[in-house]
Structure formats: C-alpha cells, structure tokens
Amino acid sequence: LDPQLEPLADKGGPTQTHAFQQDSPAFNGGSNALAPVNSTTEQRGKARISGTTVDIGAFELQLLLSIAGGNNQSTTVDTGFDDDLQVKVIDEFDNVVPNVTVTLTSPTTGASTSLKNTTLTTNANGTATTTANANTVAGTYQVEATSTGITGVNFNLTNNPGAANSLTILAGNNQNTTVNTAFTDSLQVQVTDKFGNVVPDVTVTLTPPTTGPGASLDSISLTTDVSGIATTIATANTIAGNYQLAATSTGITGVDFNLTNDPGAAAILNILTGNNQSTDVNTAFADSLQIQVTDEFGNVVPGVTVTFTAPATGASASIGSITLTTNTAGLASTTVTANSMGGNYQVGARVIGVTEVNFDLANIAAPVIVPGDFTSVIVPDDFTSVIVPGDSTLVTVPGDSTLVIVPGDSTLVVVRSDSTPLVVPANSTPVIVPGNSTPILVRGDATTSNIPDFTLIWQSVIEELPESGLEEFACQTAPAIVINFTEEEGEITLDEEIKTEIQRNQDCQPVANQGNE
Image 1 (cartoon, rainbow, N blue to C red):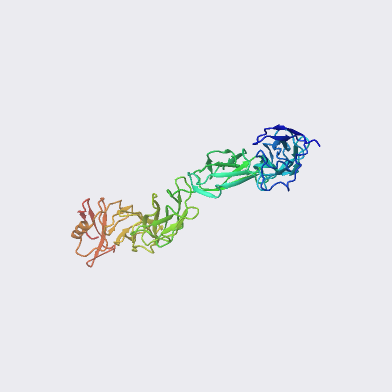
Image 2: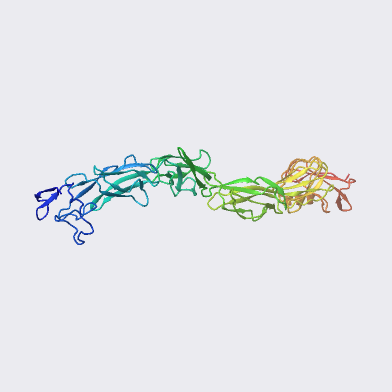
C-alpha cells in the first residue's frame, strides 16, 4: 500500500513531518472515536480533525471552505435567486477536496430563504451546490456554510419587497386645527407590498379639495423613503369645515385623511333678522332678534356667549333670553316684547372683544278711535297714533314738538302725558304743539303756529274778557286768530245767540272788541 507521503520537510510544526497527498489512505483514514479527547490539534498545532474524519498520523491535512457562487445577490420576495449557492472545499495546498459534507443554515425568522438541500457533499471538483428561494419577508440576511473542522463561510443575500400593493395612513389622520394655521401632525403614509413589506421609492400624490375647506401642502408629490414612508406638512386654509385629503399612488387603492379646519376667534357680529321692526306697546315683535357670530374670515363660530341689552328706561322691550350661546351655525336668537312706552330705541347685542351691533326697534301705542266730537283722548307718551272721527285720519304724535293734522270733525285731543287738550276743527291746518303747551281752540281758518308758552297769553286774554272764566281759549303768534265765546248769565258758552270776537296781534294784545250780537 502506497502511503503517498511527501518527503520529510518543515510543514510548520516544531519538527519536520511527512505531509501526505490527497489520495493517501491516511487522509480521513482515522477514527474520530479513537482520537484522543484531550488532543485538539495535530503536530503542527492545527485542527486535529479537518473535514469529516481525523487523518492517520501526526499530520492533519487542513481544508478550506470558500464560496464558489451565489454570494451578494438579491431577488424579490417569494421568488428564486438567479444564482445557485455554491461552495468549494480545498486543502491547504490548493487541491480540491471531494466528498466533504457541507451544511447550509439560513435564518429561522425574518428575511430568509428556503434551500433545496441543506446538507451537501462536495463532488469531484470539490464543490457543492443548491438552489435558494426567498421567503416573503424583505430584508438582508446571511446563509451560513459549515463543515466539521473547517472555518465556515456566509452567503450575503437580500429579499427585495414586491410591487407596491397597499397604501396606509401612519400619522396625521382625524386631526383639526384653527383656520389659517398648520396642523400639529404631519401627514404620513406608508407603501407596502402584498406581504406587508415596506416599499421605498414609490411616488405618492396628495390632493386636497379645490373648493371650500382645505389645506395647502409643503409638497404634493412625495417619494417613499427606505421605510416606505412619505411625509408632508399641511396648513389649513381660511374656510372652516370637515374635508378629506386624498393620497394616491399608481396601481394602489388610495386613502383619505379626514381633517377639520376649526373657525377662528369671534370677530364679527351680523344681524340676520329682527332689525328695523315695530310693534304695538305690550306686544311681542313679529321677528326674533337673531345674530350670527363669525371669525375674521366669515366662518360661523359656535359656542360663543352673546348678551342682549335693552334700554333701562323709556321705550324698551323685555328680552326672552338675555344671555345666549351660539349654536353650530353661529346663531343666537331671542324673542322680544315691547314695553308699555311708545318710541324708538335700540337693543344691543355684544360679544366680549367684538364690536357691538344694535337692533333698531319701535314701540307704537295701539290706535285710539275717538267716538264723537270734542272727545278727550290722552296720548300717554311720544310717538303715539290717534284715529279721530270724520274721515278717520291717523294722527301721529312723534315728539316734544308734535305735528297734528286733523282734517275730520273737531275733536279735543289731549297731547302728551301732561294731558293738555288741543281742539282741532274740521278744516284746520297743521298745528305744532310743544310738550308744555296749554289748551288752544283753533278755528277752521287757522294757520300753522308754534305755541311755545301760554302763561302770558292766558293773562292777556283774561284782562280783555269778562270776569267769568273761559272753558276753551287759545292764542297763537300768527295773525287773524279768532277766539269765540258767548256770554250768558255770567258764563262763557258756545251758544250762538251772543258772540264776541277778540282779535289778537303778534304779541297776543287785543286789536278789536266787538260787542254782543
């Protein structure tokens, strides 16, 4: 038997030794079971067992394991790698070594591969080969090749994600911000394949509404990063409301961000109904007083406290609700009822920090129908309507200086709260009566007069007439005013048997005195 030994030589140990050739019966010819347990190295200090079985003798032929193919490659998840995984075994003298068992081990979790064979035996060329298929998890990993007594090697492999299949919102959904401000959270989406692996370098387009509430975006067209994520910042426009912002990518079902632009702070009060109306005293106004509160951009503002204020004296109204809160439409409304005083006035509506608005209202006393001639009617306050007999003309008494036009039958009308009577015959012209005027009797051909004060006039008339009192008297600064009276048994009446006319000049001095007829 030829041992096929090399000549004695220095092979690296403390003493010279005979190396053997690969075909020597000493190669892998020993028994691992008989190898000394406490002897892990051979004569040169190298591994006692290199390969599958210990060699015979003091010399152990050292084997080397190397990658022959299939390293540093990638494939899409759930597909086979293009190149087989191939290892090669050689000895320390660069001779290929057949019949060496090589074990391949891939990761048990995460990105990995399935191998056709995990236990291989080198062929005559010292190589061992198997196919590999990526699992469904994307990522980079290593497949380890080992053999007993030989330093192992690792294949570096990568499973790439599949085609973009799904678009998912990661952040920024269902949030709100005040109009014209940025949202707190960025809008963020992630693209994955059908196995849930993130997909980088995918274009995602974000589309906000073109009208109504919406948002401006830092970037509309985005590209996913290595984590499959695309991100942008959104800023609300100036229109309040709910809306959706679409995120789409070619070939993928899109997703929508649900966003809300909240109205800003209350800035403007607008009167919607109830302004410039009137009603009879002690009755409710037909229209409620209604205002709408908006922000500076015209968005309605709910939840705002509104206070209504009516005058404390004079013409005014009782308010159904003085303090109200605006509803979802920014509206606040209340009923109002006129008090017993006639006149014009304002009811204010205010919100803290906002310019007040005022409703212009009027209380009108109910019309009074005078039943017959020379009937007294008391007008309790300014701006009161009186209907007099004859052609039933409506008389309006608007203020301190009262314009009275009465074309109908002579009627005694008491003007203002001081109950001062005014007798107006059928064909009289307008008479302006101040609030402190005293009674006057105006004949049918009278003209318009201003009656400022009658105290001196009354005294002047008394001096010219008999000592008996006057039941009706008058004086005005216009000429040709006639005071009619009849004297009978010491009393002045309206009997036509005796009549005396006293004409007065501009200063209410007598200008004529006609005797009894």
